[in-house]
Length: 141
Image (cartoon, rainbow, N blue to C red; front, side):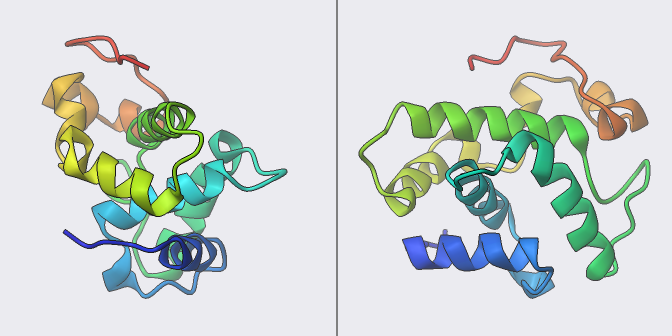
């Protein structure tokens, strides 16, 4: 697992925002890093802004946003909710320490949403396009 510094987190967030992050660096952990960075930026509404940033980044790196690839609304919004809850519970923790803690737990696994959504529901075109509530278990945040 990659350990990120606060500067790494800022570089990832800025790289996604400006579409300059090298595509191989856009990992599961980097998605969380970008979420943490956006959630802590003054004047930024991560829930409003992150979907467009990810779509634009995907297009800039040759990843089509379709019903089967690219941007996924339900996973993005669920991840933002998880990241926000994690950060709120740790108000005096550095972003890097909070991110390391999150990644060491269940959210460090890329399949974490499958604890809440069935595979068919989560990977449906509808879930990619718009928020779908979990069908297995409610989110704890």
